[in-house]
Amino acid sequence: MDIIEKDDSYFPEEYIKNGIRYEAYNSQEQMFIIMKLMETALSEPYSIYTYRYFIYNWPKLCWLAWGKDENNEEIPIGAVVCKLERSNTNKAKRGYIAMLAVKPSHRKLGIGTELVVRSIQEMERDGCDEVVLETEITNKGALALYGRLGFMRDKRLLRYYLNGNDAFRLKMILKEQSQLFNDIIP
Image (tube, rainbow, N blue to C red; front, side, top):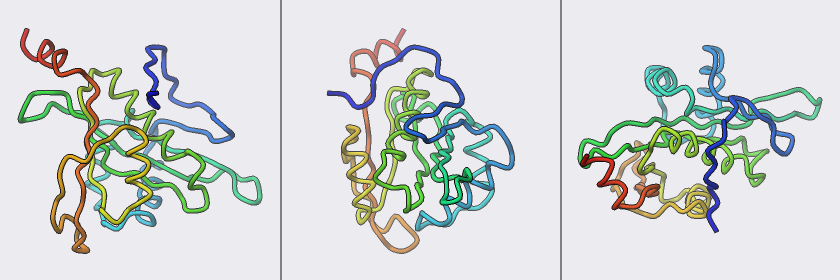
């Protein structure tokens, strides 16, 4: 069973699922919200220029999740930041999941999965052939999430992170190899 369902219907830029509101990036103030979420969840620091690079170039691949706090006020609880470009090596359209964060208080509720699936669906609509990402080999939660979605370990990257930890490059092939060749070679 594929977790990522193929759906050619229109994707709204905002929707509610299981009481969580998901929305595509749409304003400058959201960039600072995304930055704060990532700073508290990721081991690697990123400059504002990194966020601008991804968010300004691929806003529809950057999503926020909003939940409620104990006072029933809406708060940001998760975000994903991605891009989609042609690969230099095989000219395939390659999606890249740069960052994913969900507040610890809201983990294990499917929010990270929903953010990733939504981004991949948007990439597929734009003709994406494969999706890649890196994650620390010690990040068992991320490895489990991406494994459930069908990502495979592509390679181990030694001392990839500033903290000295290794990373796994994970890859998901979205198009059959024969279809990929048909798209690249007219």
